[in-house]
Length: 346
Ligand code: PLP
Ligand code: COI
Image (cartoon, rainbow, N blue to C red; front, side, top):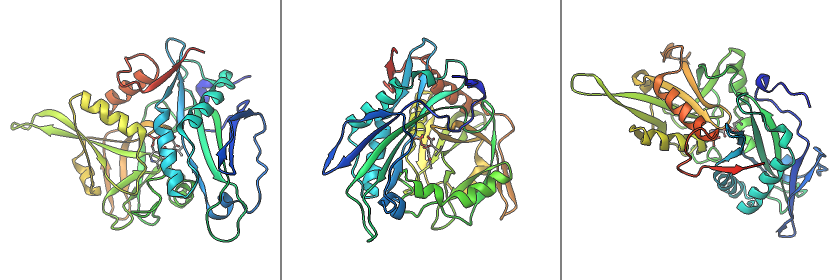
């Protein structure tokens, strides 16, 4: 195998094995590894006809001590259960989810990038409806698949800033729609907006679909803003970590972890509706998620209102501190007080 680990981007690299398990006649089969990356799927399967599909994303890290750490996979299993229920699919039991991830790791050890390369082994668990149906309605048969792939950074470059454009012409998800679930339809519905932003070398921020007033999330990541807390003499006495509260956004496991770390660093953590104009009061901003970790934002451009919010060209001190604290846990360089990592000595 000849992979230049440090040159990997967020792209698919064919692993040796994927892992599969089907649900038929009311029972899940045992997960098994296979080299075959193709499905023999009926053309009328509910995943193709009616979008019965959910997915996840999680990472394994080769640590400084040579051990492999998988980060918070139980949270991904729980979220996939919620997504399955949201789309009327059979949830994957947590134990099966864990077994499949472990098998995918064991069968693809050569694809775990070495420590220090910035690359990780990404797992893409996928749940699809496989029952043939033309009548509108859910299926009874499902397939759970884990696709591993070594990946590099989501946004090219190591830890640098990305520009975001405010989008008002495409709504990613309705207030009580599927935005809170990790389902393919949310991404397909955002492509028109994200591709337009990518063509300008940027990514895009989605606003709440009802009023276009509050920040919902970044295209495939949650939004974080940092606000300076000032004392009477206007000196900076601390920082507030702000993140949107919305029924249309994906509850990010990275954001949840960063909120815990921020509290431990003494920050005030607030989850509430955030008006777009409040960006003007923030000293730092970022997108966060498994794929992008923390991607600091240099500018948010609101073309329609002719306004640009700037946060500086370099990652700010607070977000840098949070980024390193999270990575230190994932790579085994800091104590994992919350038992977020499952450690494998293989
Ligand atoms: N929001 C969206 C729409 C995403 O696709 C992702 C990525 O999974 C996130 C947020 C971040 O979630 P997590 O930190 O669990 O990866
Ligand atoms: C992730 O952060 O893991 C994601 O799945 C986001 C995106 C690549 C779909």
